Image (cartoon, rainbow, N blue to C red; front, side, top):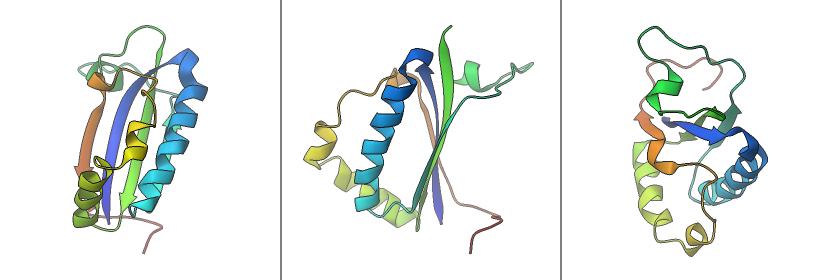
Length: 118
């Protein structure tokens, strides 16, 4: 298992546009072997004393935090998909993301423990 995680600031009034954009993108990701995608809209994101999700993405007033992760079979599958998707014309037609993509955070992780998965 390999996990790609993102933290994204999205304008509050663009929630439905984001959901549709993510849903359409997930179809493409699935075609390239992604096992699972979870898209989470901010419900409780407290301000931290030193850092927090908002500061990490330079969230502006009126923006909500999206926390999302993708589960891939392995690291090789993820990177092969990344390369192939950049050549897939469907990605060009996916439309502009409903957020400032320059401020999203992406990180890829190899799990050291998982509960509820084989």
